[in-house]
Length: 213
Image 1 (cartoon, helix red, strand yellow):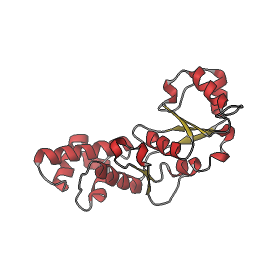
Image 2 (cartoon, rainbow, N blue to C red):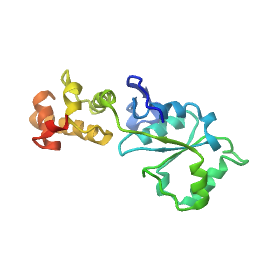
Image 3 (cartoon, rainbow, N blue to C red):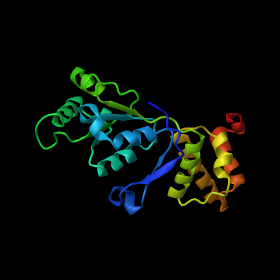
Image 4 (tube, helix red, strand yellow):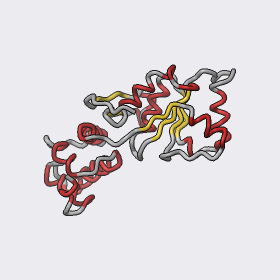
């Protein structure tokens, strides 16, 4: 898959797909831009089917909710379901019936998705394979801002520039960092400025966190 060099952006989920009516947004960057592009052109999918995998906390479910709003049928956590049932669902979008021709997105938590049923394995193997990668520095900064916004956490200016080089570049790590900053800020009854950022980094990575640069 070609890595996108576009600057990070966001798309909003429909209100009926959000928790408690609170708007949610998907940050688009190097790790998932090609996935979003492919989901906007389901007519190009082989067998009307795409398979989405990616690391933990990488927004696969949010992307699935957005895909549903685009008229795509979605099975989230497909690798946890009975493979025979998934095979029948795959057939349903190929053959006559109400689902025939409907794009089908299969979201798997396992990477790779190990399939034991030979018929399903061959069908899935011929479908479009989409994978979310790890965020680069630009996307990591956008994710920090988005995670903070979701928690109504106000970060002092320069937060991304300071934090990104000092933490691990994964969706889960960045989210955990913002959760920790929010917790320490509340415990200290202090704004989330550099002293809080440093405490959060040390809590997560130890006093040698600067070696992550």
